[in-house]
Amino acid sequence: NAGVTQTPKFRVLKTGQSMTLLCAQDMNHEYMYWYRQDPGMGLRLIHYSVGEGTTAKGEVPDGYNVSRLKKQNFLLGLESAAPSQTSVYFCASLKTGAGDTQYFGPGTRLTVL
Amino acid sequence: QKEVEQDPGPLSVPEGAIVSLNCTYSNSAFQYFMWYRQYSRKGPELLMYTYSSGNKEDGRFTAQVDKSSKYISLFIRDSQPSVSATFLCAMKEYGGSQGNLIFGKGTKLSVKP
Image (cartoon, rainbow over all chains, first blue to last red; front, side, top):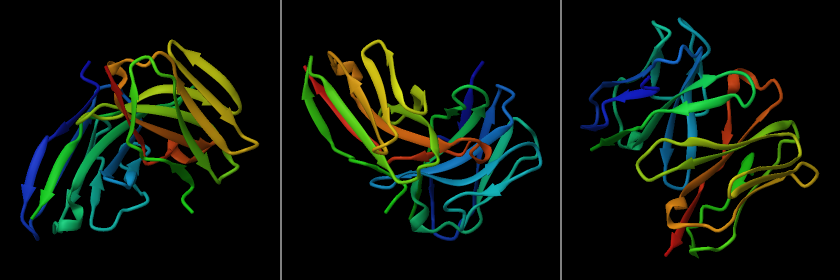
């Protein structure tokens, strides 16, 4: 049971390049989330999904797109990277019930030059 | 005013100290209150969960919620260097949409031997 995994762990992009971040969970959770974490800003929700084939916008969705084609995977895409998207990106999945615990992945450190 | 306010610190204390970490919030609809712990270069992990008002104790950690004052606290007793981490408060409304949490910015705690 690996929990939540994220690929890649690190990435450096040039302005205007595109990339996809992959999140995978093996806990059969319905809900999945993408956050970004910046110094002094805390965790901010980018997009989330309440089930396979569904996605919704969070607090800071601009410049990002997501897809949830399979229940266990949640992809975050940057079509044209900007320096403002330099951040640490975390994926999480939710176990519903008492506590509604979100389980986080280890993060992806992205630098956009 | 942000929905959740948390002093980012950093906070440095000697080994054995009692630590108090706090968050204030403005949304009276918040019913679920959590504390996540995040070690350096890792994803957050759930530490404590409390529903509505009251106290909850788990080992050296005590979570306290005062809904009348819109104030939550995490107390750490006999703190050890291994406790050093960033602590994030998180909250959500009863029946809050899709398990979405509102996070504080996190307080970085360092326990010195």
